[in-house]
Amino acid sequence: MEIKVSTRHGHVSQATQTRITSRVEKLTRLFGRLTAIEITIDLERRDLPSIDLKVSAEHKHDFLATSQSADLLASTDTVVRKVEQQLRRYKERIQERHRNTPGHRQEASGDSEPAID
Image 1 (cartoon, one colour):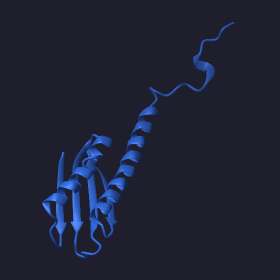
Image 2 (tube, rainbow, N blue to C red; image 1 turned 135 degrees about the vertical axis):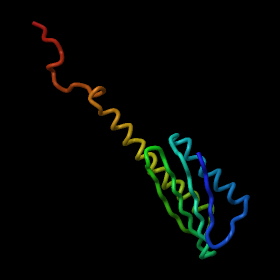
Image 3 (spheres, rainbow, N blue to C red; image 1 turned 120 degrees about the vertical axis):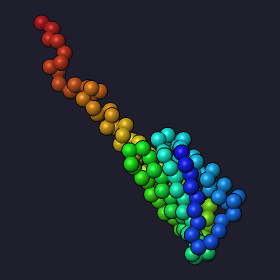
Image 4 (cartoon, helix red, strand yellow; image 1 turned 90 degrees about the vertical axis):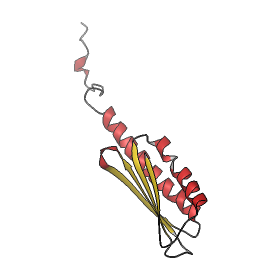
């Protein structure tokens, strides 16, 4: 999996990039099928930087989140939480779909049981 950090309208130190990357790497524990993570830091307004997080998963699914606050690391935590929620919902949807396939579904009618006389 590839993690890419890019910055617009300025520069972020290597130490800050490393901290942001380590926080974003936690997403791989939640959902193992991630293929790429792109973090874009926009420093056009230095007093209110924004972070865009794009997470790509298998089968062409992309998860996006944006946050803007005075603290860059707080914004990072916010976008990570937003993407975590999206990944959890997606994972639940996939698991629910697999649970409801005809092979796994329990028969609701009493016709499947043999009649005892």
